[in-house]
Amino acid sequence: MQLNVVTEKQVSASNGIDRFIGELTKNDDNDNPNFRAGLALRVASALQTTLVIEELALLFSQQIKPAVLHDRITFENSALSINTSSGEEKSFRCSYKLLLDGQLLGQVAIYRKWEFSKEDQKIFEYTLCSLAHPLRNALMYHEALQAAHKDALTGVNNRSTFDETLLREINLARRYNQPLSMIVLDIDNFKSINDKLGHASGDCVIRTIAELTSICIRNTDILFRYGGEEFVIMLSNTDCLGVNQLADRIRESIANTPIICEKSNVRVTVSLGTATLKNKDNANDIFARADRALYEAKNSGKNKVVSAELQSTPLEANS
Image 1 (tube, rainbow, N blue to C red):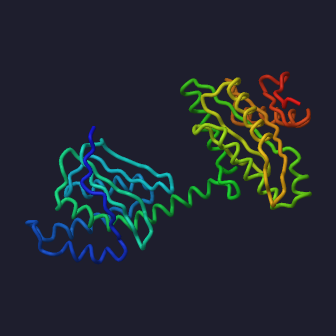
Image 2: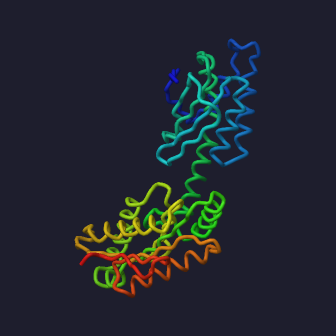
């Protein structure tokens, strides 16, 4: 499908609501001079009912559709990795970057099968001003929710989200009859790093381990900082062989990567335990088996991967 972009402009909503209402009440080409003013008030009122970005975009679309017919609306904020849409993509697009007090809130676009007239663009641009403040509030709410689910030191998922996510992944695995596996990872000799180099270096090591692990895993895998120097990885649609191969790749990557913290070159290794969901497993069962496998790896020499399913054949460093 060839996409015809009618406009790619910016609209600043700073102090824009007053200007918006003023412009809309002017007598113009519309038969009803109060049409735009009424539209402005309806849009502004409807958008006060939600802080969910997807719902906000849909409400905005529904409110302006009588004035500017369209089949699809999209909103994107690349800085926050937000990309939401509703409706079918069509050939013509009218798109604006929305700013408020100099802050880029994101890009809003509407689509339809025929061209947008100048009058359509004018109405869309003005109504975007009424979207700005509710959208900024929704973005702040989104960031607060994300922060509540993220570990402050590493930026990965935190312990508080682990239980809920594990239950969801188990339900999905059983619904679609797919394997689910787990890795529990612990940094070897971490206490000695803290004791010798200080807590700043310890924090540096934890951040680097999170980064190296994130590089190794897939986009569909979910990494958590479980606590202290311990991490957990959930792997959907991954069997016993696959989880052990990934765990050893993580182990090898960390062991072979020099870590520079506070001008000190730190050699770090990790031990990992793996488990794969069994028919009768609950959330506690799969984690407990992976955790026991981890401690077997640590107690048998460290820098190893031990599988709860294959405990007699640990994977370890070639040395």
